[in-house]
Length: 150
Image (cartoon, rainbow, N blue to C red; front, side, top):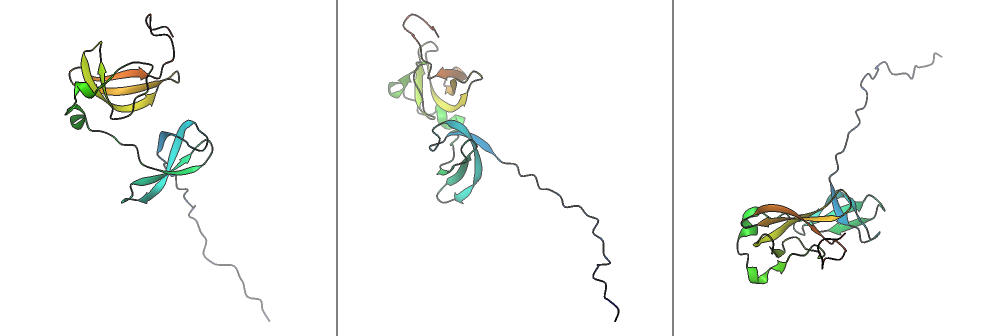
């Protein structure tokens, strides 16, 4: 009895194409490792809850957090009350959306966003009423009574 051939007559010439996934990263504070690190956005939980899964790139811990909010420039400059503003001092830490008053500029503004500087320090981007958008330092430790001694 002749044996049947089990080989297929068709040949596959196409190579499988590897999909390159682009992940978005944001800098957030990881509650598990306790450090400010790059967090990869893994996916959304539910648009109604407005929470997103983030994965720490250092410790690989996943957290369900609220997304970072961006504030529009028009909403920022409306209704800024100088009486409610916090005086700007480089040694203080500010929150996004907080109103501050800068004595040297004699102008009030609102904190739009935060970022890390190249030397590892912290900076805030503030939209002022008259002076426009400025980048200011925050959380600097040092003696500020006799000038800026770092």
